Length: 101
Image: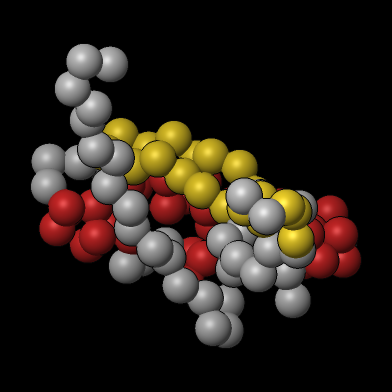
């Protein structure tokens, strides 16, 4: 089930309870990390030099998390409520600085 399906089919009480877990995680993580919640995402297409096709990405949201080290960020993400969903995963991507920009 996609994130959009989950949100569309959740009752107001279920949404409040779910978001409560996320807010609790953010508040705890924010004691040692900088956390920008981000937003849910919905894939709309994949653009290539040959045109536009449907996207098969499994990415359903993003957050920006900054900490003292990669290990510190990963340790905190291991407790993220998203991981309670069956088959869920979190990919950690590092932003690289671009000299001259």
